[in-house]
Image (cartoon, rainbow, N blue to C red; front, side, top):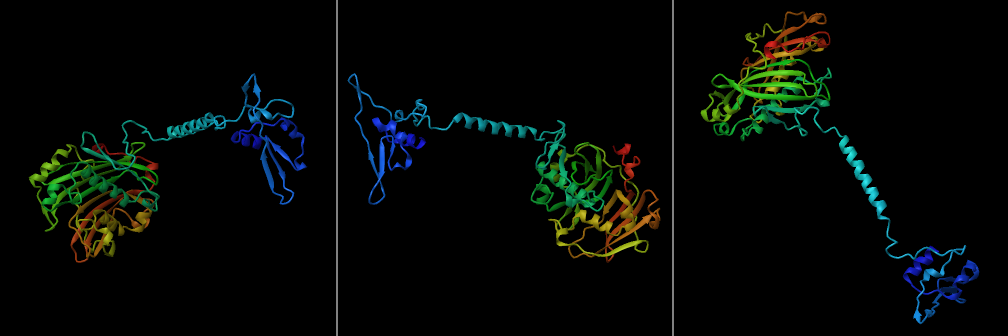
Length: 420
């Protein structure tokens, strides 16, 4: 029936008078009538012969009336067939297609609205790409960092090198965002003209709590004047979700001529570039006025020799990155200290730089503690010296260590009132 209707729609031929009786014929009778088209097998070749059974259109009251070929078909119960199938009513049901498309869009919109892309607090940084931005009247630079799985150590917390790299990264990005980054690495345009670079001379860091894998830390940094020819840079690291202070750091920087490798005064042209970004504030870490004495080799209890810089340890200024010095200092820390304690603060004085061909040794002495029985003692202090094998000093340092997990039992990590 469907094939007949489809054929009739493309071949509009009138039905013959005996078309209504053709439905009673069996399919195997050798002849089939399909709406005026008869076919019967040939006696010789077995092929089908098809001929059209044409009939003149009837006249009613003198008017020619053409009967649709579909009208010749009746259901077995005598009822008439449906309306003729035309090009229009053979098109798909567009309402169902539109309903499906609408359902897809509504589902996608619901999933988009369920995404947690909005900040939890309006005053928090919206920094989806981690590139940072300048806040607080253009004087503070803020950037978020996610602690990766490869940045944690044996204690399941972020390593010292990871935290110090965050400080260095925000310092460079601060200069870039402020438009003070010239051709050099961290140097202003005027500094580049005069072959000047920044070098750190002193660094103080307090570790209140170490972040762990998956934590997102927020790093704020700003600069201030330090004497006549220096600059101080401070950092404040906090948990981006809770606002808890994790790390505080303060450093002093001076200028050095990268050709002569000698310290230089700040030229007036450079001072005019950087002074608008100076913030009038106290150091975020109270200055430790205790003098860092030179650790004599005969006094050192633990010595690590044969430390050499790798090519990857050099920065673009062709000297060893200052973060690498910290790793070398801790190389000589006794293993019982590393196993039972965690670094709570450190003070470093950078004496001179070292290059690719340098061979260094790290010296450490533990004070006010018995290294053989560190499990039952409280905080301890270590003195450090990083020097060339021929005796020239590179870095002097002092570190303080607290028992691991001490924050779970007391107020060890609270911010001192004088540095809050």
